[in-house]
Image (cartoon, rainbow over all chains, first blue to last red; front, side, top):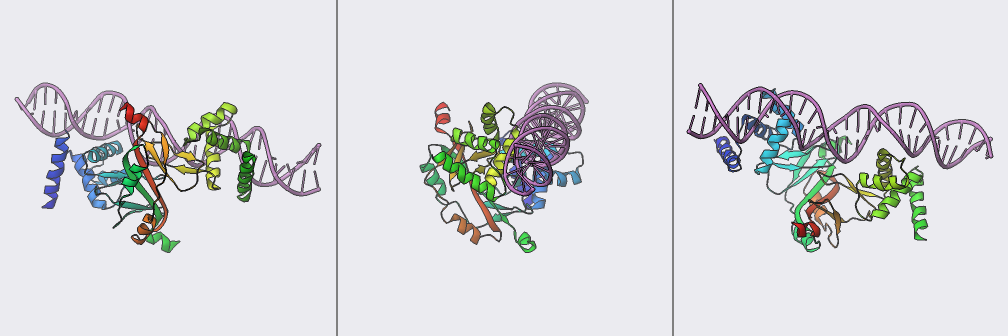
Length: 144
Length: 144
DNA sequence: CTCTAAATCAGGAATGGTTATTGATTGGCC
DNA sequence: GGCCAATCAATAACCATTCCTGATTTAGAG
C-alpha cells in the first residue's frame, strides 16, 4: 500500500531530524491528505478533532511546524488570511480567491529566470522568492 | 515649491474621495517622506508622536489606510513582520532582510509577461500579483 | 462670524492568528 | 517494569491591527 510506504518515508525523515511519528502528527498528515487542498491550521485542527477531540490547536501548530521543518509540508501566507498548509512541496504557484478564500494551484507557470535576474540586481543575498497571487475564483465570478 | 504642489495634489485626491487633508494625515505623509524607506505603522507612529504626542496609533493606521485608498501610499506585507508603507506607488520590487528587517528596492526588474502567463493558466480572474522577496542584506551578510 | 451636521479624532478595548509556558503524559530503550 | 527525554494539552500571552465610544474639529450655510 502506498500509504504505508509514504508513512515509512515520513517516519524516516522525522527520525533523521530527531523526531518521532506521534499519533498527533499522523493525524495532521491524514487531515492534510483528506482535504486535498490548502487548509489553514484551524481547518486541520477541526478535522483532527473529529477523530481525537482532546487534541489542542497548539498541538496542530506544533505538528505543522515540525512537518514543515522536515520538508513534507509547505506553508504559504496571504495577508488578511491565516497561513495555508500544503502537502505539495514542489515549487508551484497558488492563487487565493479574495472573496471566498479558496486556494488553488496555477499549473504550468514557473518563475523562469526571474530569480537570477533579481539576484543580479540586488546586494541582498536572496533566500526566498514567493509569488503571492489573488483573484476571483470561477465560482465567485459567477455569483458576482 | 514642490512640497506645496505635492500637497495640493494630495489635497485634491483626498477631496475627490470625500476626505480632507487633516493635520494628522499630513503628519503621516511627512513621516513617510522623512524615513525615505519602508516604515511600519509603528515606525510612522513614533515619528509622528515626536511632533504631536497626542496622536494615537489607531489614528496612524486610519490615516495610512485612507492614503492608501486614494493611491498616494502603497503597503506591502511580509509574513512574520508588520506591514510596511511606501510613498512609491509605482510597480516595483522590494526585498526584506530576514535578519534585521530592513526593506530595500530591487531596481531594474519587472514581472514581464508573467502576469499574462498566469492569467492564461488559471480560471481565476487575477487581481493581484505580488512578489515577496527575502534575503540577507549586505550589512547582515558582513556580520554573519 | 456663528451655527450645525458630518467627518475625524484619541484612547482604549477587542480581535484573531500564532507562539510560549507549564506541568502532566507518553514512548523508546534498557 | 522503570527511567529519561520528548511530546503533549491547556491556557496564557503576544502582537499587529481593527473596532468602538464619546469628544473634538472642520467645512460650509446663513
